[in-house]
Image (cartoon, rainbow, N blue to C red; front, side):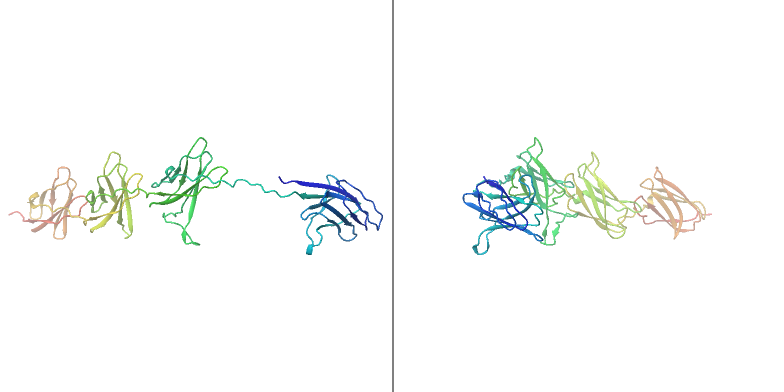
Length: 428
């Protein structure tokens, strides 16, 4: 234990006088003087420390209190009252130059009309070494108690078990940007390390640290524990797996319909409820565009609608994203150019002349809603849409003897090639 001892004495002084005090054992003593004389006052702090105090009370400049005979380091304080007073000066005993006597010289701005001061000396006891225990370090988490979950499209987590209430878990990981790329420190040209923490709650023995994103690929984080009143533990390196990836669609399960004058479609079968199909294609501006569709409840397929793939042939890239998994690799699927409707066979056409310029055409088509057109040369003579009976009779006028051309256009297909018939006016 360190001890300090403090002794106080007082001395009478007069302006323009110098007073020298010689040791006297642990008593408060008073000396009186007449102008121009010195009064000696003996004060003793210990048998080994005999001190002398010299006070010079100046006018017009700072006064001084000089104390000798004390060990180096002793603190000397000058008070204006014997108790509850104010310190008007203080100093520490220092060794004089070239091994001269050690002393404390205290400058007092002005004693004013005081004729007494009170001096205390504080001396520290011998220093005794005391041993104590070093700060303890927290226990490093066990690898088997740490679980890293690298989720898809959600915050990732690091859970640590077998802890104590109040323990703090700290996770060190590589900071990523919005594109899930490492953020590089310009000073070191290395990835920046970010941290996240969690504390073990009351009545719990585990803590879960939430991290916005660890990245799609696998990697390593460092995990530490800091217990109450202890230093942070050694960091544990804990590896984690990449985000699980969805299975790509099979090429033969993808069907692309490049329709004419209506939205095109990409159908994928063999899927699971909730799967999302994404199609990458070249848009009307020539830049890559995307379209998606999700497998409905109880279904195993999805159809993606695309405004227009173009009239010619080409290809699209198709992916699948399943629940809690990241997007699959792209599968390329080619498609044909927009198709013409199948040409009508002459056997489904029946042309009946009625006059030299008129006639009728009976036609049968494969699909309700098909559109039939009749041409003579470059001139369009008639257009009709076939109803639910899939047959229609078309009246024709302004005919001339010669060839007629008949086409059919089914929904989603281009107009077919012409089927040729010959119009011959009836005999007179």
